[in-house]
Image 1 (tube, rainbow, N blue to C red):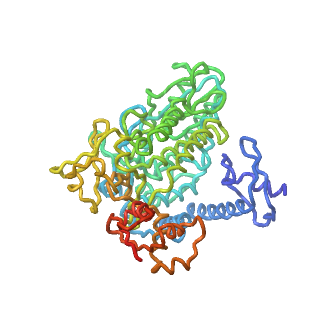
Image 2: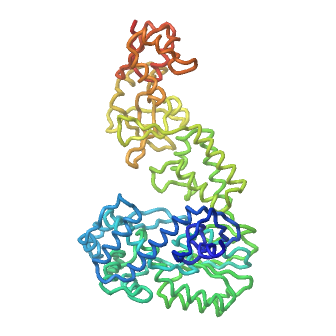
Image 3: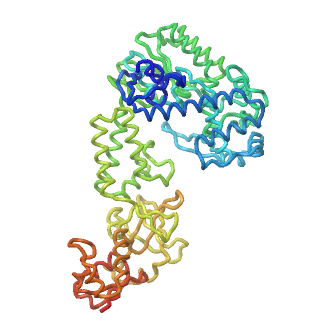
Length: 584
């Protein structure tokens, strides 16, 4: 057992840790029920043999692909390897990538609109960050190519960003308990690396790729950028391959800065473009030997320091590394947890629609605003809870309380209704119109002359409402009966192909009543109802409470039969928004 433990102890995938790739000889595999693994933080974990076996075969496949990657000779070998990596990730769903696709996208001189589209997202410090997203065809190639590059690349012990099993938590933990923390940011990190540097790195050890293959990979992974009239071909911020390539190129930088840190007795890590040093003693004088040597190394590696984001933090003030607060233990900023509590409070007191609008309004903290207006509230809050769990742990009292409140809200809300008649349309949240108007303290208005006739005003902003074709909106607003104007009509926050909008529609059919309606429609006579003998308390029992009347459903109207003596059928018709016909 101890021999097998030694082979599986460094397995990446059993436990997230910074260790080398699993290496196992097939003749040492033995039958066992569980294996004790001791990770970096010295906690005992027990992993089943099925998990280890799955990881073993995945590692063997990884080693096989790595050998193929390092033995590539031309672009045809590259295509075969990309397709194999894609099948490894997607299985039978993967469709092959053809050689003409690779050659088409491998030319960065091609018009950028055919290769990339540009997005702008707000920065935490203000301003906007440009994100270059590859088009679908190129993205499919780059995702598979990124797997190939990861098979080839052995991560540096100091690179914490975009490496499997490492995160901002590992980056911050390395500097916990130090008197001084020194943060540096590299300016225009991705776009400072051009195509020639990518090509050169791939042709050098340990990769040693042929120049033709390296040229194709560099062409696929770079984009055209115009600056001051000059044209450069650089790594785009937003491509799947950019983080892996930057880590490969920064290996020399990491090695030199880590050596400098050891020389002065410091700790060193790098998370993408965020470089962090920490120590118990002070060596950070602007004109000192350490700062001078560090700047020289960064300049020699053709990077530029962003002076605005360089800061020295002592133990007497709040120390922060990649957004995580260093105190006696790792923690998030108080504002983060406070904003999360605020969102949950709004949801509890004012409802789902109110918390969604709060996330979209500008009075919320930038990191809590939706970067895409169609983001689902529950997904956003769940992601923030998961981040809180990652930093503080799943037993932390703050996390446990907030997660419990979130679970209760999700349980009360239920499952969103997917209306069968509208493929691709999802009803995220549905309320009656009076409830909607009371929640937002507004009124649904009608403009008969406008292109979009329905709207409401929230925070001095006019927001338009889509109307179902089954509703005669002119007839509704022509009525003077305000009390019954919205009878049988609801408003929903809907989602269709990642686009969110409000829609006015007839009352939705609850799936429970759809099932009940189908059973009711199956009865054709009073005698058949009597012979069915429904159990007490069942949904069918209400048929007997309606004095033996059988019903048929017609989904075209909202009228109720006048001879419904018990009122049960009338209530059922209201819930179904259906026409009820009484048969004797």
